[in-house]
Amino acid sequence: MSEQEYLKDISEIKSLMNRSSRFISLSGLSGIFAGVYAIIGAAVAYFFLLPKGDFVVLHSWNFKMLLGLLLLVAVLSVVTAFLLTTRKAKQNKVPIWDTTTKRLLLNFIVPLLTGGIYILIKLNSQHYGLTASLMLIFYGLALVNASKYTIGNIKYLGYVEIVAGLICAALPGYGFWFWIFGFGVMHIIYGSIMCMQEKKQ
Amino acid sequence: MGIIDNINKVFDHRIRLGIMSILVVNEDADFNRLKELLDVTDGNLASHLKALEQAEYILVQKQFIGRKPNTRYSATTLGNNEFKKHINALEKLIKK
Image 1: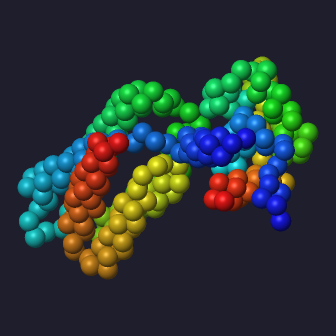
Image 2: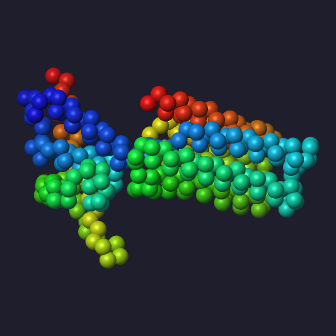
Image 3: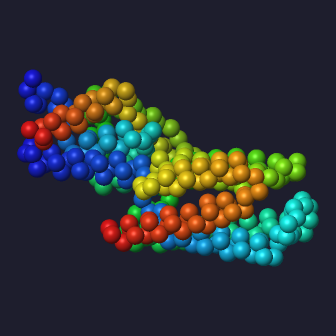
């Protein structure tokens, strides 16, 4: 075999290793949307649901609305991400639902569900002080864990979320603002960076 | 030491190299997944898999999913090591 053929072999090996083990088509735009939803949700909560200078009481109307709002933001983000990612996968003609995707989702969902259930347990025993911090930390861990199966820089987003969560835990009372930073601002910054990279390709 | 010392005869085919590169980065893969990724025919893939199996570079596990037979392939430790050696040798060859 000539040198040229060996070179061709090696580039094919690299491509196969990536295609078979990593998920390529996460869309940057969905990150921006998730960030915007989070900020709108937080603004609604800030102006309408959070009592001024008072603590939120569990089992109150406000608190239930707050949880509902949180769920709405999460569902909207997931649906948007799913639609945009499917569209991108179709454009690139790669299958959306294969072994790699299943592994990516599983690795993302396990830490996230653990965190979600833990937060619900804590809320049930009246410990809501650390909710924002725990959400950021577990979301960050889920991202870092899933990043093994994606191409791109999603693990750095995960690191930022974890650090933000830890700082948030050290500064009680600012949870709301850290939540906006982590889920709103960081998603928008990360999504924009991804979008620019996608355009370059 | 000659430059082609570590070039492995067993890997001297694009499809075998392809099979190994998929199996070293994944825990395992089934026949259809390999076929889809490598874009080859059944018979072609099967014969190359057989060669790798005979060299004991891959492990073959047959099972049933419902009524359909399903065959999963994974790289053995020997296969992993030989693949790495082969890739390093290729790299050296190109750098010369």
